[in-house]
Length: 202
Ligand SMILES: N[C@@H](CCC(=O)N[C@@H](CS)C(=O)NCC(=O)O)C(=O)O
Image (tube, rainbow, N blue to C red; front, top):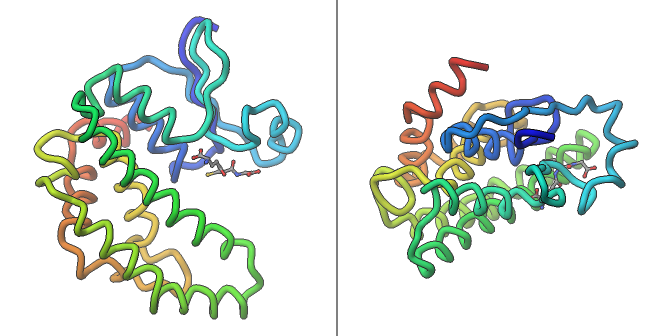
């Protein structure tokens, strides 16, 4: 291996896509390895924790968990705060996104009546509470901590984009409309030149 490899499923979403975006914004030339669903079961046990994304760096063991990957890239390439307290605050928000995913992801595989009921309950309760907590912790503008995009913003962008695209059944695309800072981070990341150049390329 001569250059970094980012391994994820063949979809421009979620934990893998936020890591691809971080590598791209960092200016790192990397192999964007896209795993087909059929190939995954045979690979799963070879990964550090049984999930993707995985980042492979020359001369290092494979690194897993999206937040660990993002923080490493961010620290090395000016996409994560140098101040240790502010960095920890960003990591807190990154964990908040993982909480969102851990609650919503199990609904993907539910049968329809259960999916509908579970997601409607999330719309009534968990999702507004999640967004309210995100909103009150966003202190900067236009990004989470200020003027410059950081890995936390890429993570928030992926999370918000998932819902406001209107493609998650039983969850209205307006679910985060009352949280202007959260939407503001999404919009600023979407409109960031580095993010746009990734989508122009792919
Ligand atoms: N905590 C891990 C979660 C990894 C994870 O569950 N990834 C999903 C895709 S987003 C996955 O690999 N699913 C397939 C499986 O668990 O078998 C992270 O942040 O990367």
